[in-house]
Image (cartoon, rainbow over all chains, first blue to last red; front, side, top):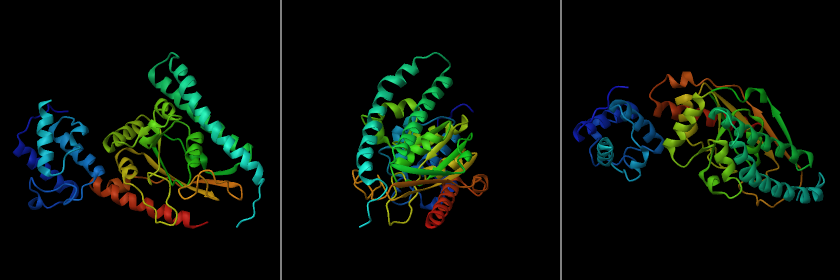
Length: 87
Length: 256
């Protein structure tokens, strides 16, 4: 595995948006930090596992699932990922 | 009302006795036998396998006991297909006793089990010692199941996630399909029928059926996950595969 990269929130947001497009065929123009993952994008808990796997692979580091219990929007997800990088 | 046959009054005695034996055995197994076995020397994989096999023998013995005392009869078809490396075994779940048979007759298998059993006073130590997989967290469940398959074991999953709701179309949770797309070498269905129903969702657990229970476990042909896997990103392929499983089970269970 490559050395883990630490990315800024903007870059993380772009990574998440690209993953959503690749995995779920979600139009990137629909995705903003306020977009609800579950309500608007219909991403359930099984989908979330595949999404996080994609993000982990791109960032080169494992992200603990416990961080994501309070994640509702894309913005929440980006912030949780950014926080996990500090650890 | 159906006539009471098949030694009904004997079954009224034997069935509660079986419940008691199951509870006591699980308790003793978990409290004394498995902890002792855990202390035996050997590399970790051997010790894990020893525990797993002991739990399997206990379930197998209990299945045979229920048969011998006349509480039920059972019939397997193509049992030899079960217990291969990297195999996911998917089954419908009409009754609480079907899982005893799957676990008792499948060598080297782990099982996805509902989190509540880790808190059940009779079986919690057994499920932990056997190394079964909890469904509490989707990501942990999927990772543990994938790791188990990659180690060369088989994993038993009930995609319904709970006992079948009679009279409703089959609802399969996508976890099994997702794990299959991720890590299975083969997926083998088991079509289970329990006639008359017992320990099922809509029957009080204490009701003794008028006729003796006939449990049939028919193992279907292997399904190769690779063609499904190749058809797109996993969120998509898992959905397609899940739909395929639902259609397969609905068709098979409709033929009586």
